[in-house]
Image (cartoon, rainbow, N blue to C red):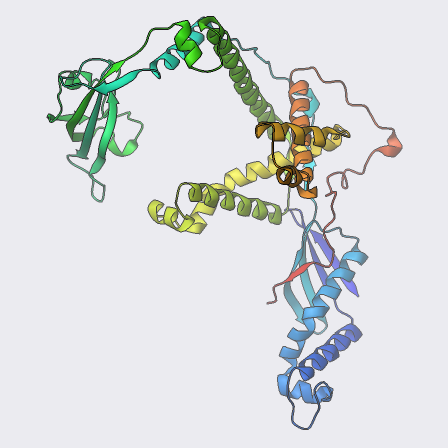
Length: 468
């Protein structure tokens, strides 16, 4: 068997295998026997027709095609062994290069190659966050406003009232092919305040004094820097039909009101817990933003290469997520594509940058776990399962615990824990708080070409046959 290999730029290897004549002959005779068993040939029992009779009946081309069903796999497997290639995913049989001698070209995906560069030299200033008194006051006011008592009022609308309206708006001079209607809603609730901007800014004066049954009309020219480019500098005509006016009474703060809002002993207790909740939320947001900044800087300096199959798998995962999100909104993917005027291919093209980023992020974090020797300690997965169970309200059914305790669930939980540890380590490095990486003795240093190989090796005999 002759084998030629060439490393491609996208973490794939081209492998060209010249099939020994005796191997081809053996495969063709095996194919002839299979065809003979499954075909009635006059004068012969199933599987007993001579080889040349089968060749004459089916032809050399069909016989070769049948032979390649097994021969292609066998040659792929043998070629991988002799060329010492470790496939990362199933390869493909792409082309019959020649028939005399029979020569087959395969493409073999190999493991991603991840070089993080001097990631331990990255430093990004971290600014501690603190909740201000203004933050607390704003949150308290929002809480108070949500406790307002709203009831019908048989009078003209005043400030702080809520009006129920039908609203319609259309462009007076739309572009060719542009939809004229930009607003068409019924039973919309609008709070009459100084900063009310529905459907346009500074509309509050038109609402004050309006009564149920009244209709107001007005024109408005959108500014040239409007966030919606389609209506920039365009004039629109609006009609607002008031259907109901409601008064809105906002209660004053008291210990009683605070107690009615939940597990609070007093107004002071509520304020303290609001501040604490805001602080936790702000710290979480700050940490998330900081983490993304660190990841972005690591990825900027990293050199990450991966075979196309990795991106394709991520694209499929992303498409499933999109379909699930749409399903939760009562839409199918087909419905969404019709609404957006897109094809599946156009949607995939739109999602590809996100898929690439997700692949790079995952590979980067995986390599970081390896380089930093991060591990899951005994008992960590079980402890995490306990936390998950607590989030379901303490008492949960044994079936639910069993579901989280399955091998697949434990693997997912372990992966999530490792990801969290990798992110914690990145943050510590960027803040200059990580211990120096312990250097391995020279005889333990891994070959860089092997350092990013998958821990779970895919089967070597997996090959997709696409014959040309």
